[in-house]
Amino acid sequence: MSQKQGAVKTRRGFKEFIRKMVVSLKRSPQTIPLISLAVAFLVYSLNLSSISHTTSVLLSANMGQCEFVAMLFSILAFVVFLRAFPKRQKVNKIMIVLLFLFLILLVFADFVYITRINAALTRTDRPFVIVDPTPENPAGENLFIRTAKNVVSVHIIFIALCAVLVATLPFYGKLIKKINTSIDVEGNMDMGEIDISGEE
Image (spheres, rainbow, N blue to C red):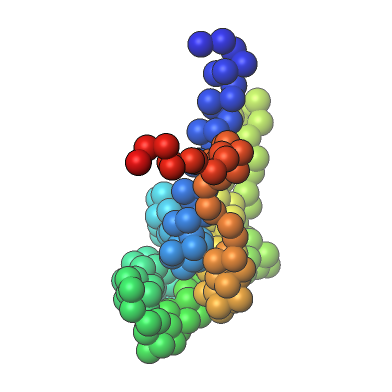
């Protein structure tokens, strides 16, 4: 196989991958907000150690409860999301309302958590100071607090994005379904009419 043929085959394979992905989205456009919800959960859970360490060090009011709510309702949101969009059935409106309630609770818990971090960093009485790494102090100090704050901020963004994507799903879902994913067979338009009269 020549290099040119290999490039053509690779390009066709990529196009086929994109086509199959679009076909899948046409059947289940709710996959888009589900991905946003999954990313939010992964970002939060994979950095749970920094968040837990921040909670134990700052010891501000309701931080532990906010962390618990974030983990609990992140998992429950997945369950509710899947029940809100059952396969080959109509959307469950009750589950949609419950999903939005969970998302609002998640954003509220994250907002309270960030507020507690900011209060601990800016208070006049012995504020926590985040020290960046230096040659003299390569480990820095309290860097996990900054990590926790950034993680919770990103969590809010993806949760809010999920809510927006669910709310606008009827609109962009129709646009996705209009995308042409049919396969054009090369040469099928050049085939002339076949004469079978001589075969009798």
